[in-house]
Image (cartoon, rainbow, N blue to C red):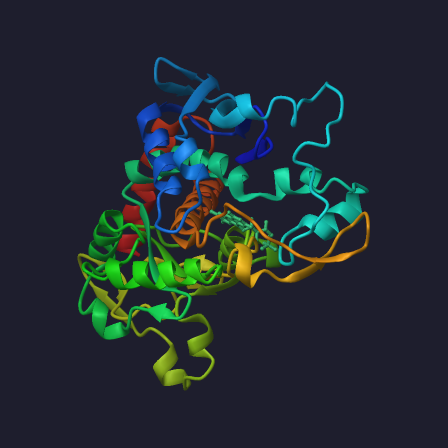
Length: 390
Ligand SMILES: Cc1cc2nc3c(=O)[nH]c(=O)nc-3n(C[C@H](O)[C@H](O)[C@H](O)COP(=O)(O)O)c2cc1C
């Protein structure tokens, strides 16, 4: 079984992850992992932390001379700011009042986590609840993308909206998924259409001035996916459900749609489904992709399309702060924070790409075997030929 387990606090010494079940004989380039980490750190509207941290990975185990061994891979990402936090986050030293947090933020894990785990210093909660943890998810995603790209599966993302600012259908024109992705890679906000950044940045600046934070909607896709990953045979083998869980597990994601999702609910059947066509050299295919590449919990060969909605960041800056209650004194207060992300939708999209990559690799290894990548790759090619001839 392909799985990963990560650990680490936001201001701890380091973040770490163990990836188990990654096949042998894969050429792993550390630069590819670092590139993905850097994509997660971009985005207009991020807080000061992104300037402090320039994440790079250290490979501790499971890879020798750039080739995966088929044994557990351990990755480590040091927190560069650690030297300023040694006494506050010390695993062994004496407790300190420094940077103690007793004022829970509405919308964050602070209050419920404090009650549940029995702490009044809410730093014990937020250090792990924080999305800093997603750094190692992106590192795992990079390992997964190396496998996927080797068999012609490509994953990308772009932003559809930030707060009330959205790109309209006409803005996209006839841009393909790849073109949208290429534009997003050039945009500070991962916008799929060139020349729109300034409007969105002004909008974010206005929110910042008012002490507000913003959410938004992004889309992720995977192209080149073989037919028949996932299964209808049990509730927990359905791939649409697995993808939704993986994307929803990202901090602040509150809605996930596959294909046209909620919009399908108001369409008549003849306008909702994707007609089936066949050509000798191509096999079965569709001209539309309203299902987002998934039918019956299985991939149907069309691109997988997933949309996710992120709520506004809970930490608010000064003026617009929400009322809360001090967990020690029980006095009401209105929080005032100095530094936080205003919006992190572009970063969340990169994390979601990683989660989709992970889920797809897991399915591939389940269907095609799980030890030596050279053999797995051969089986995928043979299977693709079979689906073309079916
Ligand atoms: C990439 C990313 C960056 C985030 N940055 C912040 C931040 O700077 N401040 C903050 O309060 N929340 C931030 N969040 C959101 C919180 O982590 C999240 O709202 C919180 O953990 C509570 O979880 P929930 O929103 O899923 O209920 C971020 C989320 C993501 C995905």
